[in-house]
View 1: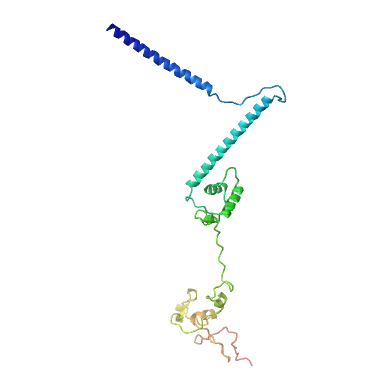
View 2: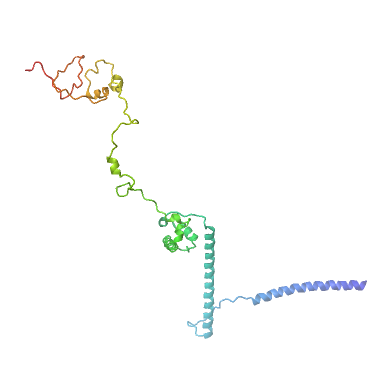
Length: 268
């Protein structure tokens, strides 16, 4: 029994040492890999000479410059690729979504950028005038886009005011305006258009400012008052002379007419 207990204790101690050894192995392995993956940085050549004459130094500088140029080109290509992908994604999202309208000549830059994005045209660092030129060139190169539902209203012009009909532009089946304005239908009886009945003569048909309660107010009416009493034009003056009477029993239709002659009985 004592021997088995001793063996068991040795076994446990060996397992503990194995665990510690494994931990130490992992630490040293990590440190070793860090040293082997050291990045290659650019070398700085320190020299007091104004011109480097060493062939090895010139070769190292040329190789370092070539690496820098290659890295810069790769970075620029990556940026352009990302920008192109962003434009394609935005154009795909806005596809068949917005209908543009108006004259591109008077649009602001933000609206022109939206149209350019929908057509997948580069807009970075482009002014409004440059965008107008690019868009017009793109539409001229692709005339089918002018009939597209999204861009159709960009090329619609406001209709001019319709000119009045003249002898030159009037259709042949319609009469000319000059002939219709100077010609009138032939007179004839019509059952639909009859003249209104004449008002009854008398003080009731006069305007309020001509009506009076004086029975002698209408004894010598004026021509203006006469046209309210008689709806028809007065008869012409008598060709023979007659006396003007101031008697209320005598009514003269034209007391102020210039064509009447007043004879004086006392005149020779």
